[in-house]
Amino acid sequence: MVNHRRYPDAVSEPTAIVSLSGVAVRAGAVPILRDIDLEVHRGEAVGLFGSNGAGKTTLLRLIATLTRPSAGHGSVFGADLGGPERFDVRKQIGYIGHTPGWYPELTLAENLGFLADVMGCDRARVDSSLAAVGLSGAKDRRADRCSHGMQRRAEFAKVLMTEPELLLLDEPHSALDADAILLVDDLVRRTAARGGASVLVSHDRERVNALADRTFVIAAGTLQ
Amino acid sequence: MTPGFIAQALAFTRRDLLRERRSGEVVWVTLPFGAVALLLIPIAIGTDTPTLRRVGVGMFWVVVMLFGVLIAVRRTSADSVAQRDMVALTGADPAASFKGAAVANFMLLVLFEVVLGVLTVVLYDVDLAGWLWIPLILVLVAAGLSLLGTLAAGIVSTGRSAAALVPLIVAPMSVPLLIAATQSFEGLRLGESILTWILMLIVIVLVLSIAGVLTARPLQETG
Image 1 (tube, helix red, strand yellow):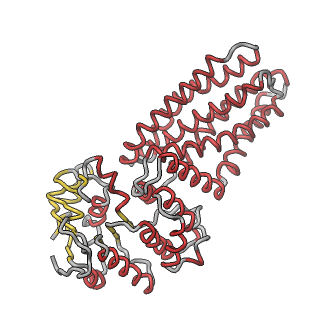
Image 2 (cartoon, chains in turn purple, yellow):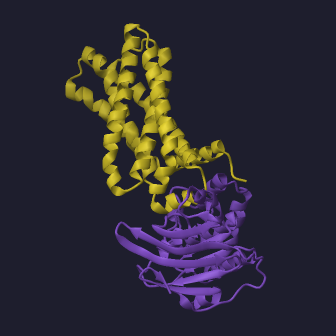
């Protein structure tokens, strides 16, 4: 652990949103994560560093309930990561991975509108969320005609629209301009302030150290 | 508030139809290929009218089966891992996703059947005896094919090697559909009752529908 700080205005409860104990993940016979112990509490932001292939993305996907643990015990919002109850908490998780998942044929507004319809969000929030990330002018542009940076921005609009309690960000500052980087930082702070939590995976130690309450290094699948 | 099953399924249907409207994959690629297939057959077997009239219905159904499954499989299996993750994290019921995708495929397949059906009548001079039953047969076959294709696409999305399994799943399941469809038309031509074949089509649709709903979650989690 490198650094510790807590947001003073967080509406925090002592409960951990994420709790991992002795968790391992294997891909066939290959160990990806080993003996991971980690708790992420309400109102905090946790940073994860590590070299390529260290297991950072797998750990994020595990917390996002997209990968199941091979051994150990883990829970998110109290839902066992190995059990069917994990499906019920997915709506509370905002995961932004390496590659945006937008449907290329749909416009940014249509992509967000689809998510709003499926998740039961107010459709009016589509436009306001896109405006908040500076994409008002591009809302009717097809996703495949938007730059990678714009698609990343749109992912942050998705987070603003759905307001997840747990934010999982994989290299959130990559492919973003200075304004958008500030937007990411603001999103992490706002999530913590309303009692949520964030886990950030990054190579940008300086920026994440300034943002996170605690930071860890992950190497060869173990947390240090 | 999380929307209900039908509202979620409708959102998936709207998404898929919008994607098709933009990409035009069915209307501008698959449909013309199906039409070309129907055009090439008379060139291959000769333009003798009685022969064409005899084989017309069978050729129509073979083309509908082959291209129809392709429509459903391609549309649903083309999603990337990031897109599947995005849908999984909406917390939406995977069964609603399956049903929504199947409904969109169904609508595209009905369009496919109607266009190729008109072409078959024109090219093969097919006898349209008992034509009042034809819409029901077309609808049931489209429903069966869309469910079968959507289910197969779910299996494809579980991994690269799973794609090899698709013909093994689709071929045996589409044979009863093909038999029921062709025999229904034959029954209409001969003036016989086709209720048995209609019932068979309904049973196939129900079985595929239940199988799709039951396997939606496991397939989503395996992918």
